[in-house]
Image 1 (cartoon, rainbow over the protein chains, first blue to last red):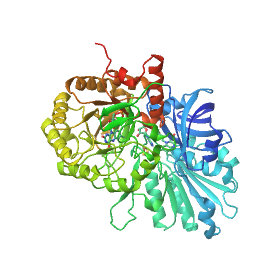
Image 2 (image 1 turned 180 degrees about the vertical axis):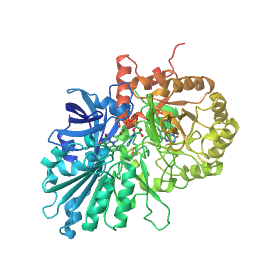
Image 3 (image 1 turned 90 degrees about the vertical axis):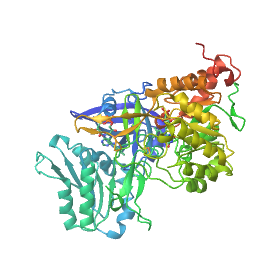
Image 4 (image 1 turned 120 degrees about the vertical axis):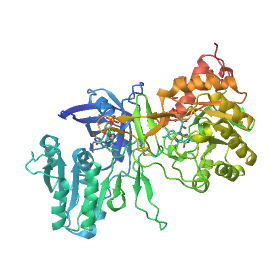
Length: 275
Length: 304
Ligand SMILES: Cc1cc2nc3c(=O)[nH]c(=O)nc-3n(C[C@H](O)[C@H](O)[C@H](O)COP(=O)(O)OP(=O)(O)OC[C@H]3O[C@@H](n4cnc5c(N)ncnc54)[C@H](O)[C@@H]3O)c2cc1C
Ligand SMILES: Cc1cc2nc3c(=O)[nH]c(=O)nc-3n(C[C@H](O)[C@H](O)[C@H](O)COP(=O)(O)O)c2cc1C
Ligand code: FES
């Protein structure tokens, strides 16, 4: 991982409070970025307010840049979201483990699809599976399905971009208020798909209540999946223990274990996470 | 070249006065991608207990103005795993290691200290009597001068290692605890641990931390820490190590100026994992520019 100063190449406002930033980074950072890994970003103006860097999924990357989606929810994200083209940000990453290799995970399952489930800002992490060049097409033998839920139609982000950059992808959307045509939760879409393809592999990222539901659905269909968590982080590299998540016991002492989301995650096998 | 070496006490000589604070540096190894940890004055481990310990449930950290509140709850791998899995690598990396310890009661503290006494590769013990985030262990010793003195005496009896006692700022008169533990045999004092704080959310009408309260650290606490170090340096004859909000070489020099023999960097490590060595270089550059031959000439040179 690298500590670097990046420059804002572009900052597009997608909705009232969601920004899409392209930032320069060292080539080595871009090479080590992989779907599901994240970066800590801060302004580092020497004023210590906000103090800590904030974690964001690396949604896409090129040879010397990467992209993040930032929803402005507090002081840290507001400050980053307001950065003009040409301003500097300090970065630390790529951090975390990322999603497992799709090829090896699906090889034995012949034509079962890969199902990507995104809720709200979870699209940033999920879209990285599609937008990273080395993952296209994800698997020649398997279809990829993107199930994407958001609060409202205007919060279903970057659908064109995702469609354009993905081979052999089917997209299903749903919103809390029905403004995209279908009303409800993205986990309902997941149930529909699993009913037809029970041997699928699922990757999911979104708010905790959604991930809990995804976990239950996967358990009901006894099928494999991975969840990407977004616990609060102070350091992002395993030294503060602020991000720890309870995990199912693996040993035989019956005691629950815990994992650092920043270094052992953020992506975990769905059946291991204890919410 | 400015001479940065400091002798804290005869058994504890540091190559420079910059250490990393317990709980902000993991077990040390996590920082090897960022800096050569052997070049730091010393690294201080996460607080270790006899048995492994899980921390507090719920949200453990939240940011506040120029600082952060944490309620980790002293989660750690336990002393035995530290000795088998971590210490050998730290020795190999050439790091100078100080082990931070805590327990539920006096016997626990003494047992860990006794266990570490004959272990090669440990420079000193830092006794945490000041963690605000756990019910037992820590703070109840740190706020009562007599309890603190009894604890230090019990640890003193079972170890020949230099003893650093880490003091809590959450008391009405820190000099009482400082004097009590100095009399009980502590070789060195370090201060401050975090200040107890609270953050709430008016929308959900709930505390932001699972533990309700947490320990405040970072630049926000520096003036309080500096005042307490100044006060304790004047009250006791034993060396003092300054901690609290240090994020630059100038911050570190402020603590040295008021009389701290060395400093520990905490929260700033999260923002810039290389900060420790940047501060070492910054101190050296400053002293060189101002024509000091050795850092010890600068220490305690505050004029009031
Ligand atoms: C691995 C990881 C990847 C992430 N990826 C993205 C991403 O791609 N795009 C994006 O917009 N956000 C992402 N987040 C969440 C983002 O880091 C937080 O929204 C941000 O840290 C909030 O900072 P703030 O100072 O603006 O808010 P604060 O002032 O700290 O908090 C404001 C509000 O945001 C909530 N909040 C704070 N931290 C988090 C968090 N970690 N997760 C969820 N809610 C939080 C608080 O509960 C509070 O209500 C990710 C988080 C993690 C851990
Ligand atoms: C996340 C976190 C965990 C900490 N854990 C410990 C600990 O285990 N033992 C201890 O003595 N102090 C612990 N501390 C206190 C620090 O060592 C230090 O005294 C305090 O943070 C003030 O310094 P700072 O402002 O430079 O961070 C912790 C602090 C933080 C922020
Ligand atoms: S964020 Fe610090 S340990 Fe994970």
